Amino acid sequence: MNSQGMTHVLSIIIENGLIVDGSGNPWYLADVGVQGDRIACIGDLKHMKAQRRIDAQGQVVAPGFIDIHTHSDLPLVVDGRAESHIRQGVTTSVTGNCGTSAAPATEDTLGLMEGMGVGGAQGMNLAWRTPGEYLKLLEKTGVSTNVAALVGHGTVRNCVMGYRAGKPTGEELARMKDVVAQAMEAGCFGMSTGLVYTPGVYAGTDEIVELASVVAGYDGLYATHIRGENDTVMDALQEGLSIGRRAGVRVQVSHLKAMGRHMWGKSLDMLAAIDEARAEGIDVTFDQYPYTASATGLSAVLPPWAQEGGKDEFMRRLGDSDTRARMREDILNGTGDWVSMHKGVGWENILITQCPAPSVEGKSVAQIAAEQGKDGFDACFDLLLKFQGSPRIVYFTIGDEDLERIMRHPAGMIGSDSGASHLEGPLAAGKPHPRGFGTFVRVLGRYVREKGVLTLEEAVRRMTSAPAQKLRLLDRGLLRPGMKADIAVFDPDTVIDTATYENPHSYATGVSTVVVNGQVVIDQGEHTGALAGEVLRLREC
Image (cartoon, rainbow, N blue to C red):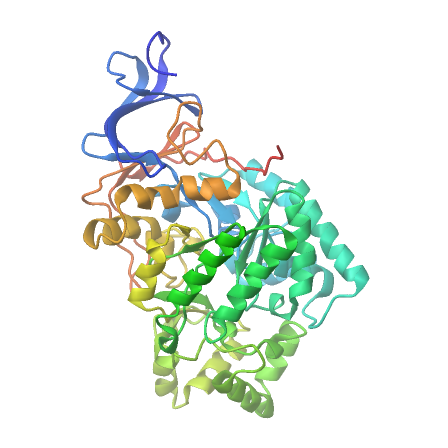
C-alpha cells in the first residue's frame, strides 16, 4: 500500500524523517502515515491530509522499542504511565522475568509483596489470583506501553510448594503443569526461570523440562536467568540449552554476562556455546543491558539453604550466630553448584539502593560496615535481619570487553531488567539501577554514536524486530504498512541517558515523540498522559 489513490485524512503523518525500519536495512528518507492504530502508508506524503503532522527533520523514525526483559509487573499496577521506560521509546514491556511474576498468587504471596512494598505496592489492595485476572486488571486500569506477560516458574512453585527444597511430588508437579497451562491459556507468552533465586533454585532440571514442555505446546518462550553467572556459568548455560533441546522450546537467556573479575573473558566460551546450539537447531537467543553493574536483592548474596522454608525461617537463621558462621563460610567458598555473587565482587562493590533506612542508600556494604565497626558479612546479615530481607543492591561485576563482545553478537537483544519508575510517588523510592531510566538510549548514545560498537540500524533491529520475532509478535517491530503504529522518534546526535548510580531518577533525553497503537504518548519529550497500551496475548496460528 502507498499514498497513490488515498484521499481520506490520515490520523498522523510523521514527515521528513530518517526511516530506520527495524529490519537492519540502511536508513532511507520517507514519511510515515498512521490511520487509527496502524501504519497506513510510507513514502512521499506531502500532498496527503492528516489530523496532525509531526516534523521529524534530522531525526530517526523507528519502530517502538520492545523491552524483552522487564520487572514492571507491579509498577504498571501502581502507575500505568511507565514514564522511565516510554520516555526512552519503549512501547512494549515483557513482564514476569527471572522466575517472578505478579500471578499466579495466593493471599500469602500477595501479602508479602504488599508488606515489603515490592514494585511500589505498599498499601495497595492486590486483588488478583490468576494470570488472567491480573491481565484483565491491567486492561481496566490502563497502561501507556503494551504488555506481554510471562509466568514465573518461581511464583508457580511457591504457590504449589512454598519455599520447600527438593523434588515435587507427582501431584505437585501435575498441579504446577496445570497452573502453567492456565497461564498460557490466559495469553502469557511463555515461562521464565530465576534459577539463582529462591524458590527456583530448589528445582531440578527435570522439573523445568516438564514445565517448559507445557509452554512448548503453546509455541511459547522459555526465558531463563540461568543457574549461575559466576564460576558455574558454562554449566548453567548448558543446562538452559539442554532444557530447550529436551522440551523443544524456544530459549531466551536473560541478561547474558560473565560475573566477577576472575570470569572476565568467559564471554568467548559462552557465545561459542550459543553458536554451537544454534547450529544444532536450538532456537536460542539472549538479551543484555548496557551496564557493568547488576542489581537484585541483598538476600541473593546468601546461600539458597538460608531461605528455605520462607521468610520466618530466614529471619530465624539470620539471628543465630552459628548459622551466620555457616553462611559466611558458604559465601566465601560456595556450596555444591552454588557460588555467591560476592565472589569476584567484594563488599566494596555492593551498594545498597533501596532500604527502609534511606541513610544507607547509595553506600556500599563495606562502607556501612566501617561506619558501624563490623565486617562486611555481619553488616550484610544485620541489614537483612533488621529490614526483613527487603534491601536492594547494585553490584559492579561485568567487564567492558565482555559487555561489548556480547553486544556485537547477532543473536543478542536489549532488555532493561528493570521496573518502570517515576520521578515522584511510590515508584521513585531509593536509588535503583539507572538502567530503568537509560538502557535503550544508552545503547543509542554511547554504544552506537560514541563507541561505534553497533551501527544505528543494527541497534534498532535488536530493540524491535528481533524481540518481536522471538515473541511471535508478528504485527509489531517493523515499520511496514499494516503493522501496528508503535513508533519512536529520536535525534541520533543527542539521544542519551542521564541517569547515574548516584542520581538514577533522571529521564532520557533526545526522544521527542513516541506513538503507541496510533496515539501520541510522548509529545515533544513530555508524557501526554495517554494510556494507549494494549495487554497483548500470545496467539496460536
